[in-house]
Length: 223
Image (tube, rainbow, N blue to C red; front, side, top):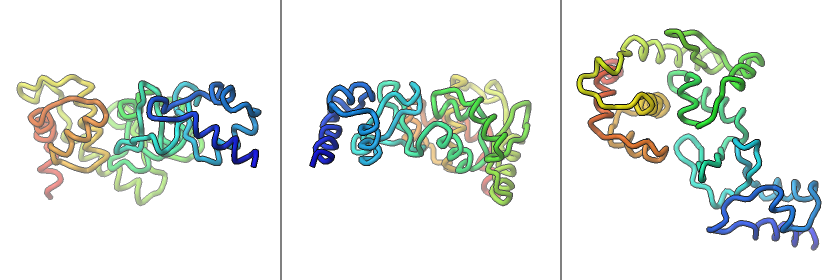
């Protein structure tokens, strides 16, 4: 009975106005010990933030994950895939054309170089230098080959922003558009615009089409 009551107390820490709590706040409100609270959080499948040293917690019922399985709540970041290390691994493995550290940082809003280095050292992912930067791929040979081929095609048609006539796009927006194309495999500008808006990236259909045309995606993917 006591166990059920303490679980209810943890859940009652959350509501529409209070979607995120720290471990310390819940500890004060629930009146239980640290070990008990950790068990309760695990029991109700609470999600810890992947930034701020996992300081914040939320419940899945309050989360609105984007297409990458991420949720940004007032700068507090949560992932469907668990901690930052697991999230980076998932994004690398699920990418269509591999992914660079810059592309990951655009998606995750945190630095990932140390995690990538560790993942490579543990042979969980594969990396290769392409055009003066490392690209990270799935360790599985079949998936790896498909991702690398996609990256080669992408690199072959890469051009600078200046070559895209009249483009007013910021560098970060260009990277965000490319990341979204890489991870969704879509060339539908309207769909991409909606997906970018989920990540708080504002751009135009014209801008997206400039990138698609400038990088010659249509020609390459229509073969």
